[in-house]
Amino acid sequence: METSSTPRAEGPPDETVKLIGCAHYKRKSKFVSPCCDKIYVCRFCHDENEDHTINRKEVTELVCAICDTRQKVQRNCEKCGVQFGKVIFDT
Ligand SMILES: [Zn+2]
Ligand SMILES: [Zn+2]
Ligand SMILES: [Zn+2]
Image (cartoon, rainbow, N blue to C red; front, side, top):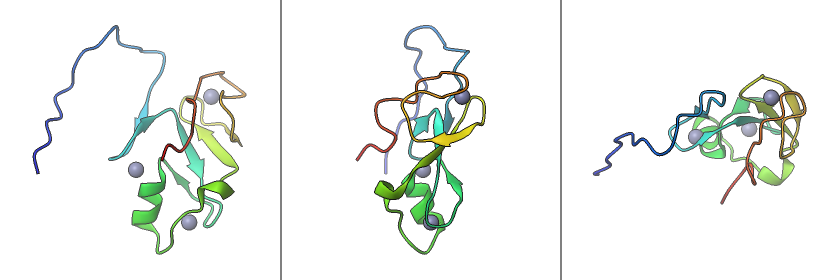
C-alpha cells in the first residue's frame, strides 16, 4: 500500500476551527451512536470497535468538536455556530 500523506498548505490555516479526526475522516463533529451510546468520529471507527454495525439513519445526536456540546443532528452547532458540513455521514 502506498499512501502519501504529505500535508499540503492550501490556503490560510484556519486556526479557529479545529478538526477532529480519525483514520478515516477529518471533521468538526462526532456523533453519538444510538446502538451503544458512545461517541465516535465516523461510522467506520464505530464498526471497527464494536461487534455490530451502526445504522446511521438512527443517529440523532452529535457532539461538536469545537465546544463539545451534545445536540441533535443539524448543520450548525447550536452553541458555537460552527458549520459541521453538508452531511454528517457521507457515503
Ligand atoms: Zn454501536
Ligand atoms: Zn473513523
Ligand atoms: Zn459548537
